[in-house]
View 1 (spheres, one colour):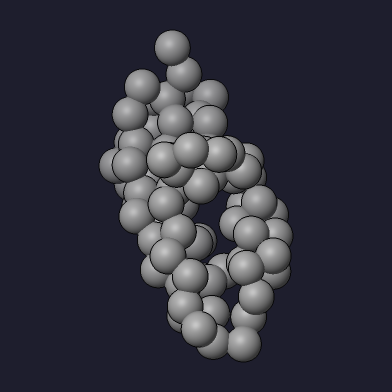
View 2 (cartoon, helix red, strand yellow; view 1 turned 120 degrees about the horizontal axis):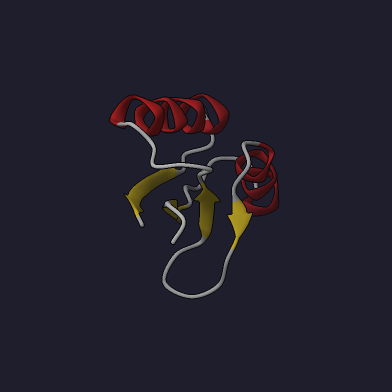
Length: 76
């Protein structure tokens, strides 16, 4: 079974729209999903905590000034 990081987004009310936020997230390698999570990132191997933290840091940078917040959940 593949390791995945699931991403749940909470969109803010700043001037950056949902489609633009989704594009930024997808540019980081996440795939859009439907259901209880909004996006998923599929790892090639079991990630280290540093790799998951690095992915989170990339999200923070990509979402800066959008008003969006997120939750990550990583497991196999």
